[in-house]
Image 1 (cartoon, rainbow, N blue to C red):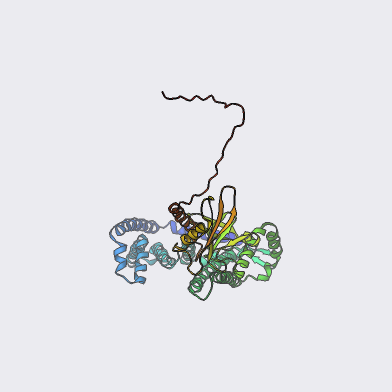
Image 2 (cartoon, one colour):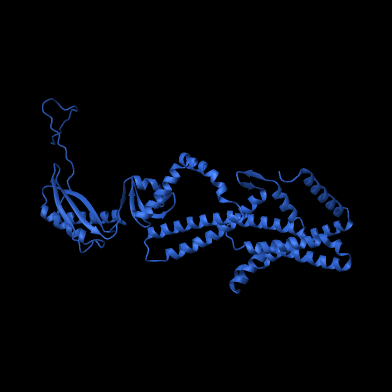
Length: 438
């Protein structure tokens, strides 16, 4: 430890004597009572303000910056009223008696004003946890500065140190690094979101290239933010080289799948084999790719379900991409008729029925061929093209229903299996009688 135990005990004793001297004064209890009264009035005033102020109608008549300021002040009405009352009490006591007898009121007023400023600044953040963490930390630092103990606290936090190689690790260093990392990551998120919006609005780039650029920018900005934050607090990055071997072993043993999915995601974005919006079939699942993440892709099935497929599976397994190079899709319909039908008429009816469908491509006429003279009847195959694979099953169903109606009109029957049982010799297992009418 850098700090001697004797110095620490001396600091504690000095602080205790100062607090004891302040508490023993009768003016302390007067100030404390005024602070409690101001707090009670402030909470009552906040309830009245919230019930009487309509933020919706008020916000419509004000410009955006003033609207934001009013919203924060209404949300922190109790703190604002408390600070105002304490300031008034401080001014009255300052002119009525010695300034030292209203010291506690001055501290309370400064703390309340500091909290108002912090709430106004942190209101631009959207994450509730980050807002709470930043607000409490900033207010705690402001409170130490107001009571004059910030320098002593900084020295105390810097006095306890652990040396790891060439790195001197102290609580103060950890707090500084955490604060700078938080700020750097927040700025990185803003910059990456801005870059993503600009890239996605560019029509010259394909969806896969857009996703790849966004991921590269995010990773690059994150790396730069971490390096800058650690360098700003005086951490030599070369001192962290001792941990690189352990990190490598951890990746090799426990993070193989994560790293494999990450690398596979980069490969998929680079080779453009799949991209957002593609209709794919992976195993028994078919749907459109709605998002491509670092570890997986999201495939929307169209029935409310989304399949999260690891990137590694798309690289190592068979994937059917219906829209890889061309969205034109060939629809195949297999059907059969009995032998009483004219096969040429059947092919003509089938081709005309498919061509009449609104989604059938006019430049590629449908084709119907006779495949087989089967035991139960003749088997045919009808094929035609549509411009997009979306709703292909519905198109097949519509054409088959129209084909059924056409067969009914022409008297063409669809074959179905018929079994004839013949009994040679013996008797029937059930005795039958025939009644002859008189």
